[in-house]
Image (tube, rainbow, N blue to C red):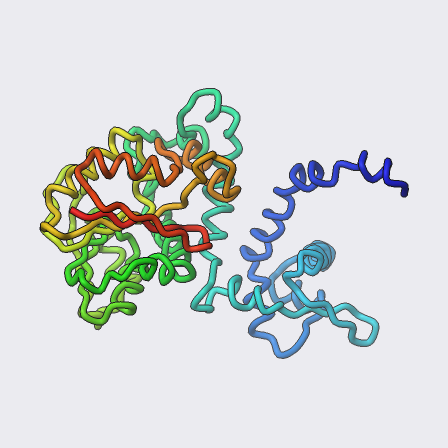
Amino acid sequence: MDSGSEAEYPRKILDYMEGFLVSKTLFAACELGVFDFLLASEGPVSTADVARGLSASVDGMERLLTACAGLQLLHTHTRDGEACYSNTEDSRIYLTKSSPKSLYHSIQYSSNTIYLCWHYLTDAVREGKNQYEKAFGVSSSDLFEALYRSDEEMIKFMQLMNSVWNICGRDVVTAFDLSPFKSIYDLGGCSGALAKQCVSAYPETTVTIFDLPKVVQTAKEHFVPTDERRISFHEGDFFRDALPEADLYILARILHDWTDVKSLELLTKVHHSCRPGGGLLLIEALLNEDRSGPLTTQLYSLNMLVQTEGKERSPSEYSRLLSNAGFTHIQVRRTGKIYDAILARK
């Protein structure tokens, strides 16, 4: 092929156009339990054995396993002229349910919730509002009533949050030295995964998870060990109820759900409750100031349009909100991963 023909071949456009095929291949393999089955097996497994073990057709499973191998999610082996498969190291660590760093539940939420909302992305752009009602037939006048539209959906979302902080949590809670703050309130702390990262990094610190009553009860039952003495719970709605006094408040992936007006309302309330000399740690995916990236954050901002009333912001936008709420000494730290940290003081 000559250079002219190469220039005329739209590889990037084709990759983007077919990107959803990659996502759904990964989603299907996780949903069927391919990676967990291979983890439990001794050595490489044939297509027929995988299909039989997962109650799937041999033809369909062969195509799925071949695609997963092409995506470098599986190793291929030949035994007696037959193709066999085993997990790659990435698949073992991130795609099996039992792994401490598993993204399985995040993938399930992406497949069963986010993917359905994104079907209406064009409508979201036209209308400038989220698409929960079209996607699920549920009114979204209250964001979290829509988000937690059933107990099962609430657990799925909390598992998503748990998996995210299992791989990113340590980086954001150690982006700044939080050891001077002995009493921390994690507002909207959900599954408690970030609280566990905090008490692990700072042995003298206690963390209180402040969240809606049904979220707190679910966290107690499913996510936070009963013997974890340095994590406690406070039931409440941080927009409607009083916030207890603390040395430090954490808002992790909270403000991106809300408009500037609602965000400023919450930040002002936090500033009022914060002890003098205390602070606020914001954890969000940050856009570049010129909006040139990162691509993941740009796509997350579209996701906020489809699912919430919020958006992703740049450091200066968050700094402006914090300043208007009364906070000073605002510092920004990039972690090099999805989520970054901003620390502001009272």
